[in-house]
Image (cartoon, one colour):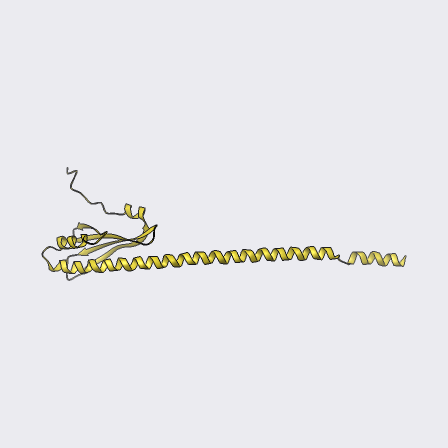
Length: 165
C-alpha cells in the first residue's frame, strides 16, 4: 500500500515530455512569426524611404529649374525697365520663354509657369513683376507643387476681348 501511495503522489507532480514539446513548438512558431513580421516592416519602411528620397530629388531638381526660369524673367524685367514701356517689353520677352503665361494687372505683369516634377506632379509658380525701379522688382505670389488638374483650375482668367457688353 505504501508503494501505491508513492506512485499516486509521483504521478500528479511530474510533467510529461509531450507537454513541454508542445509548448516549445508553440514558442518557436510565435518567435518565427514575429521575426517575419519584423522583416516585413523593415522592408516596407525601406521602400517608403526610397520613394521619399526619389521624390525629394525630383522636387529639388524642379525647384532649381523654376529658379533658373525666375532668374531669366528677372533679367528680362531689368532690361524692360530700362525701355519705354515696361509692360509691353517684359510681356514680349517673357512670352519667348517656353511655358510662360503673362497677364497684365495695374501694378505690373503677372507671370505663371510650371515645371514638371514627375509624371504625376508639377511645380506651379506665379510671380508678379513691377515696373518701379526703386522698389521691389518682383513678388512671388505662389510656389507650390500639385497635380496637373490643380494647375488647370488655378490658371488666371484672362479676358480675350469677346462678349463686350
